[in-house]
Amino acid sequence: MHDIKFIRENPKAFDQAMARRNMAGQSSALLALDEERRAVQTELQKIQAERNAKSQKIGEVKKAGGDAAGLMDEVMALKNRMTELEEKDRTMGESLNLHLSSLPNILFDETPDGKDESQNVELRRVGTPILKKSDAKDHTDIGEALGMMDFETAAKISGSRFVLMHSGLARLERALAQFMLDTHTGEHGYTEVSPPLLVNDKTAYGTGQLPKFAEDLFRTTRGDWLIPTAEVPLTNMVADMIIDQEDTPRRYCAFTPCFRSEAGAAGKDTRGMLRQHQFYKVELVSITAPEDSIAEHERMTGCAENILKKLELPFRTIVLCSGDTGFGARKTYDIEVWLPGQDRYREISSCSNCGDFQARRMNARLRKKGEKETRFAHTLNGSGVAVGRALIAVLENYYDPADGGVRIPAVLKPYMGGVEKLMPLSLATSRAA
RNA sequence: GGAGGAGUGGUCGAGUGGUUUAAGGCACCGGUCUUGAAAACCGGCGUGGGCGCAAGCCCACCGUGAGUUCGAAUCUCACCUCCUCCGCCA
Image (tube, rainbow, N blue to C red; front, side):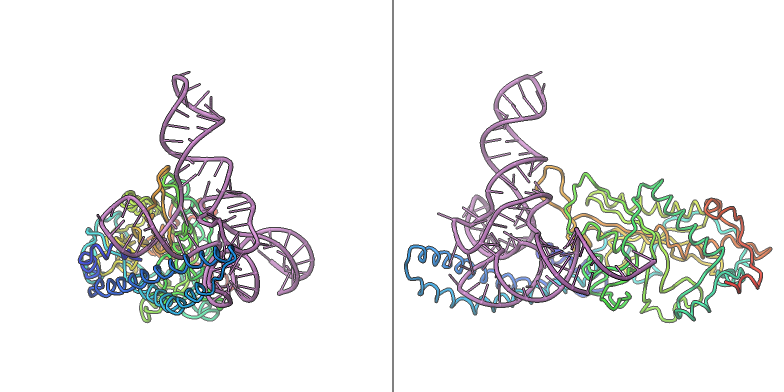
């Protein structure tokens, strides 16, 4: 959500900011509506003041035993115009809000210009892919050869873009999540949260999913939305609050399923479990003071990278260009993990600084101790990391071409009950599942 | 699902149609006093918006939304949330 006051004072800068998002100038239409609405408000308030004064007088006259009939007629005469202006004020306010809330966030200057993902900028690479290209295999082949990854059964019971895993792979998924949570809570200072997975309209609006991106979400018959990421409930924890600035940064993490309709992704990544309607993710959210969000963004990205370092997975970190940066973000780092089966890096985490964009929508504010004025908080979110894709990365990077098995990364061994390596199940065992 | 009760500012809490401009307490901030602190005393202290160069003036907001009325925190209706009891239930 944008601040109409900022647009009033900086119409050119605002139009330039939207131009970086490949959008036409918005300020003149917005300001025309804004001006008209304020004229309506001014007139309405004048009439309301008149009504209040006369009504009070009626009370006084009646108390004194006089006749107030004339005054009562006068107030009554104001009513039509008042109703008309109230209605106008309301509809104009609504359309102004709808317009404002449909515009993407203003990018930071250091977000590079570019039209799509091909123009993102690589910042660093960590780790070296070790598997020979000729030995690399796709996670789907590896998982199915293990006998623990079953797309057919998932399709039967649910449909496309679902997977069913069992035995060692099911446990590996749980181990990954457990390891990530323990690292973020134990080493990175995040507070673990178990949030609701269904949220209401207001919450989905707060983080920017509504009103524009409803089609990307699943909706229950009651009208709730299934969360596409834990960012939604975690960030909205501070909605409608005034937080003591001394209590920031607030750092939350959660392990949750994520549900996405993938409405615009028909035909994309249809093979394997790279793009599913449902996947697990460990999410990081920070609420900070405005002056702290830039440093927090670096820190959060570092926390996500640390997970991959500990898993000894090769990755690279990129900064998204203007054309690829999401609606609510001012700047986004993507972390891409090396997938030997695809012979390329693929996104496993996305860390965004949203500035005050979401806070404005949620009405989440900060106040310094002893001070009167409030400021909107800054919000950040990042995957720490996507569990499903981490599992893919482990399968493909730890694959042993000698026997078709998959070694268990050292940091996950404590979570795997002594298992050092996943080996293909016998046919009988895998069918039994 | 059934029957009751309740939602007021940062917090507690008064307020059942017109000097309410939402009392009062606590918390918080400033001051007096004190070697310092505490206590006591004095003062300040909700949010959003409009108009104005400014001082300031005005409007809206008492869970949300409609309604009644010249006038609504207060009356009516619907909804939401919480609490108590009953039923069902992992």
